[in-house]
Image (cartoon, rainbow, N blue to C red; front, side, top):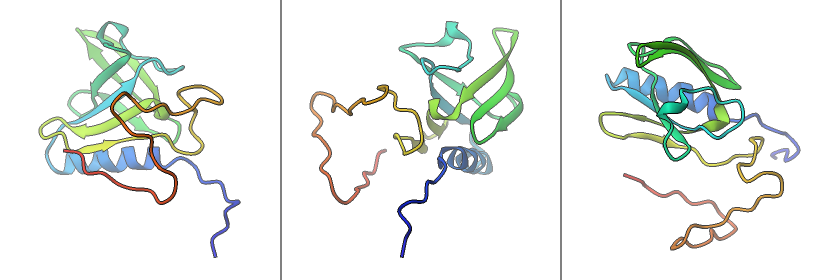
Length: 142
């Protein structure tokens, strides 16, 4: 019988590490999509568009990549200027292969800060239906 009182840590760091390794093992280039508006994100702001930034995290593009349980960090050059990049993992929206787009988009999960703030409620975008309660569903996205 499962103990519903057990609080699990975020699965995002484990999934980001695994998808990064998987993309590299398949000779592809791992890209991450980051919400640059999340507090603590340190990225080159001149490359932020619509509050987001896409970053190449392949070994040829970055140095000293560390994907920890709380943050992802590395050093890289942007327009020839060296910069230390720091991204809290809850700001990572997706990780995918540049060549074919295969990867994973992250939703919110228990234990991560709510992007809408405390008490925030998910509001479906126009044209989307509100998700019914009950059994979770998966959708194939290509």
